[in-house]
Image 1 (tube, rainbow, N blue to C red):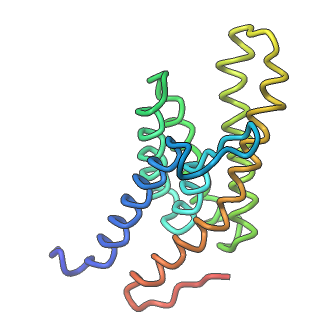
Image 2 (tube, rainbow, N blue to C red):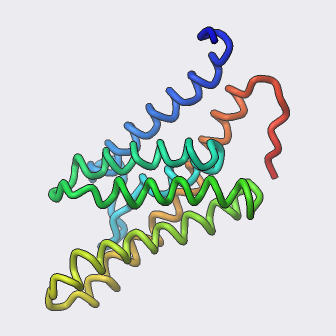
Length: 178
């Protein structure tokens, strides 16, 4: 197999890696994406979901690990929580599009919403509730859930960017997008 055989596929994935690194930089700086009251945008979750919708389960798994590793590298805890969570999100999103749902913006919003709320709630449960912090429920209601809902709004942006990249780098076969 020569490089020319899959040139557009390599270009597509290189663009996805670039978009992932750029999004991680935006997520970890407050200048690029401002907080909405106390809600901080977790941009890597909707990006991971949108890429996985077009790359399917194994590609989604790989990009989920990349998104999670970039998130874990910039977090205070280097425990790998986000690598595992986004790997699961990427794989499940790709599998859902392959077997259950159509690839459209409404599916992207549903899947992204489920994983934004699910990952934020799981993080809160593991690192706040199980540790016994006082006022953990207030933190969930004032920070984690609003942050998850704020993050879902970015699904619109990422879905259309990823879709454009896929359309531009397609190999001439008709891609079914509903």
